[in-house]
Length: 68
Image (tube, rainbow, N blue to C red; front, side):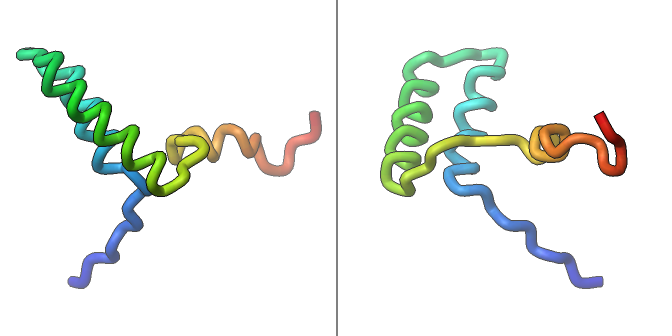
């Protein structure tokens, strides 16, 4: 069965590296600062304005078919 490739979020890997670093039991601040700098460099290079989560996009859209 063929797998459908998922679109990679812009700077997604850098963001994931930073999040995993800060949640690691053996927290290494210097290592996390390197990941933070890599994420900062990426968002500047790719001109990222804002991040959002997939679930967050659906919630912001609101319920379909309901009048407020």
